[in-house]
Image (cartoon, rainbow, N blue to C red; front, side, top):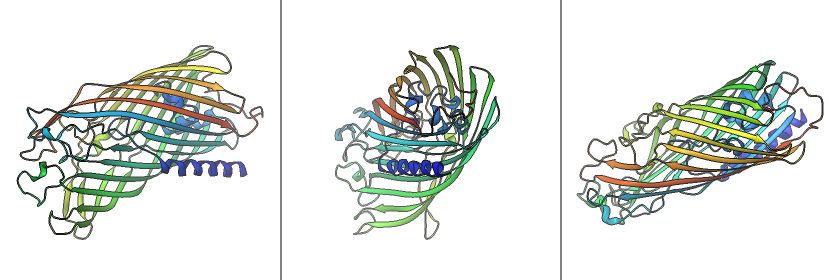
Length: 446
């Protein structure tokens, strides 16, 4: 098992890299879909049926049985968002303080995957991923400062997996997920608190809410090959409950001459997710992929922040998202034994609409357009590149009376101008001799 130990060491390196860089959410709400450069080339169509090779483990761990031998993959995505919130001067009394500026922050999201085939029917593997992430950072003093300044969500997910090839047409897999989750929210606070109009003045100090936690969940999946050339995959990622511990800090002059830091607790459940994929070979050189994803964002509801000392409520975090849906279609064309071209389109139905849309996360429905290319350097080494542009539906923010974030006397109405570009790359390597006689599963696409 020395080879497997080495694979675990490589995954640990990926874990360390993952902690070093992460950022803007691009999967509805604060989810991150950018786990695979390979699957991104298809706009993540067929991600659960193996279009992303080993990296498809993120969506469906059962695809691990589609990779014979001993394999590792490393993926890196550069996310380049542009988001500008422009307040309506006729309806927003604070519009004089200006636009948000570009609140989207460029981000790098690295992920790593490893697998080892123990025998004809048993696989073990490990993935290090980042399922959630968000950084929005408007100008310190702007028209919506009372509703948000900076926001940050960071996560790391480690997922060991055991996969079993039950028959030539059926594989199953499952494993625990160990997840770290960290959140930090900052916004302007009036001084003294409650004083009329002070919350809208430039230069108001910031209140900061922050907390983190480790939580445990699980992932499970199945792949079915009813016919040669047809692969169906279904994967499930469970919710993870986080009992966040942290602090709520009010600046000097709000309730006391010095800043006041209150230790806090809050419970937040990340959404569970179900992903369905279909990959169908239609010619020796071409495969079509379909994908569907449901994310249970409605589980978030309204977390209550309480004092760690007394248990008294300190602040509510009204989220109240709806569920999210993602529909995708992609295809690949094998030009020759070395080169593969990929393309895909997807439509994402956001869990956030105008009734609850905030200045922290002005999300909306969007279209993903992706292209990608793969190059097989040798029997052991291959590379993938992908590019995606995300077209976002026209978006507005209406924080008025009746909105969950509304503060009396401070309506905020604005238009949001946004778009996203994503560039991803991957390296895939097989450590053992690719020519050894380890039976390959029939479920491989080609």
